Each structure stands twice: as structure tokens, then as C-alpha cells.
Image 1 (cartoon, rainbow, N blue to C red):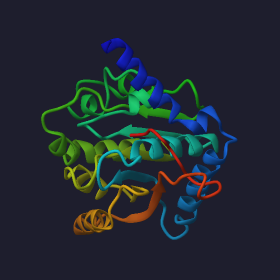
Image 2: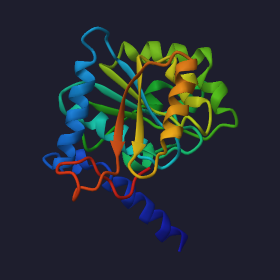
Image 3: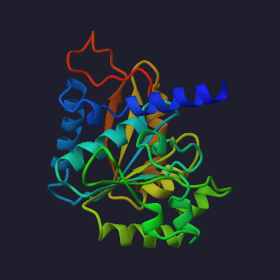
Length: 235
């Protein structure tokens, strides 16, 4: 039973990567629209290191950032997708890579870049840095000087770096890491995210001078809005 449940979770995660599975679909086109909007916001300031978060869990942040990574890579940009949700990592499942080594391994000097950063079999120009073993001190690792150095090193190797971070109202990780990024995207879910939660999340990010570049509305029913951005089962 446990094996079947695990397989079901894996299958669900893989289906969420629609930009790789069905690049010509209306939903994939919406991800490309988000990518274009991000690129337009780069006119005055280069946005090379971006993070994605949400106010609360299960609003679609991991699915969103994974698909955005694919769309950027499909455009020929050398893209690195990093799972910085060190409490509930899912990117290794979505991208179908091993999680033996990852971000925590690099931050604790237990692996090299070559060991931890993995290519994807689905998309050219896209690499993944999974979370790695779950640590007892996620916030401290993300706020460490080693994290700052790592971002600097990786910025010289990739055209774009995308971080998946935990929800803002759950822990302080998104605030800590977001302050070291060029910008952050907040994902909200239709009929789930409350206005007060979004306002509170924005206030917390503002306190640490995080540059919020936009909000992505997730979970809109396609029957109600043509060509909407919709997912039924995401992380």
C-alpha cells in the first residue's frame, strides 16, 4: 500500500510539469505569458535570481516555479531550478531527479557542485539543484554566508536562477532568502487564499526589503475563464 501511495504522489507531481509534457497547450501558453511579463520587468533592472513563494501551503508555488523554469530553458536560457523548501521539498519528484545530494549538501560542504546539480532528461538548458537531506536548521542555512557565496558562484554559471521557497506565513525562510534575490513572485490560489493572508505575506516580505515583482493567480477554473491558468492537483 505504501509503495502504491508513493507512486501516486510521483505520478501527480510529474503531471504538473505541463510545459514539458504539453508545450503547445493553453496552460503552457499562460506560463510563457508569465515568463514574458517577468522579462518586461527586467528593463530597468536585471532580474537574474528569482524566488517563488505563497502565503500558505498548497497554493501552487512549486508547480509554478517548475513550469517557469522549463519555459525559460525552452527559450535557450541556461536555467538552474533550486529547491529551497528545506522543510517539504518536492522539486526532485516534479523534475524526476535524485535527492541524495542537494542544496543542504552544498551549504554544509558535504558535496560538490558536480555532485549536487543535476541535468534534466526532459528539457535542454535546465539543471536542478534539489533540496538534499532535510536539515534541523533550514533558516540558519538559508541565511548563512555560505548561501550568499553560493548564489554569487552560481550567478556566474547560469543565465537565470529560480528558487522554490516555503510559504511566507509558515516560516521565515522566504523572507531570508528573498532578501538575497533580485525579486520574488507570490502565488495565490483562487477561492483559497484569503485577502488578509496575501496582505500579511506582502507586509512580511516588505519588512526585509524583498522585491515583490508580481502575483500569479492559480486555480482558476478553465470553464469560467478561457485560457486561464488552472491546476487541479499541485504543490
